[in-house]
Image (tube, rainbow, N blue to C red; front, side, top):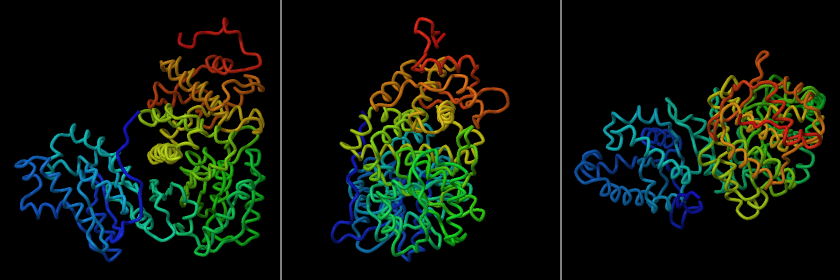
Length: 561
């Protein structure tokens, strides 16, 4: 079990303290520049703690380090930063990269709005190693420091923004500043999703739905496409959250279930929006799980050639996966998601509290996507997935831990999509287990298996093939099996024939030419997106999990031979 950074719950500012905007992050992240940009917009003072500390020391930080050592520097730095945080009046602060190593500083930051500027190792080193910084002399040690401090930055901050060559995106800074506004609970965090067009905000945390009006990303009016079941549970809350700041147009209900994710249903939704007078200046809110998110996203992509779509995901699958990345689409009888478009969201509001009304079977089904994401990520996220209690028990006993897991899955998805927005290569990794899953859903008319249940079975097929093709350790598949069983997810199936499943699998969107390539893993965190698999091997892996006429164990081949 890993030890988490000691960071208290975020609270409102203590009596007599004015909440400040505080930029934290590693060397070379661009904190000082961002602080100046935001301060100029707000008409506030911008304070650089490193610059102020050097003036107080009467010598450069590099010189003080060399003459007195790091411990003496950290003592002086802590005293200065604490005094700045307690200073009366508003201000925008940029803290030195190591300031968050102080437990007292982290505790005090909980009373302010901290914004973490995330920078990758190479860009940080490029900016820092010739700058005179004493801890930027050795590249290996530099990387170690970044790894040590990153969890502290993330645990301290309420907003996580990317830093690129030009600094943090202007829209991302605006979204972070908006977290200070009235009507935004301190439990809501911001993660900025990077896209070719600049990106969009993802708001995560209890109360995110209630903040949608205060954080509305744009659009003259809000029209809504809602899952009818979810609307009965949370529709009134959405209306209240939007009022009175956002004028509201019509609400179009969609029956629950994958069988309604069709061109016919899309035509009905589009027709109702047109009859209600929706215009290109308006935005479409999608309230529901993955079906409504995909359907509404598709309608938003094609309605008058594109309107903004704001996602409010209500299922675990949607909250960790389908609401992000801009993939929209509807199903054909022959194959899932065969008609669609890329249309990035205007914003996503992910409120884990909505999961409390999710049926148990749906919550468990969603956990299969968590397992998939953990396998792709490897490392700490996979360890967290393995260590989690059954999802329903974890959600009841420790919702904060589940929320942390949800955010970890979101971050993985956003990072992959940022590197391959149009699904031309690396993004295929997110399809782990989905070739079989989609084939099973299509072969059963989208009515027999929930998406997550099909993914659970698809992971068993993928891990068995991964043992054969890439030498995956059998213990990984056993770990997956244990997780599925603990969460009452299927580990065998019956119904369609193997031939029928192979026929549907041949229509997989990732397939290129006659060659059958699948996404497999050599180990958690090591994904191979174009592993060539013979039809015989795929047939055997599918046959192994059939529950009605599976081959006797004695006749099965050892998949590791």
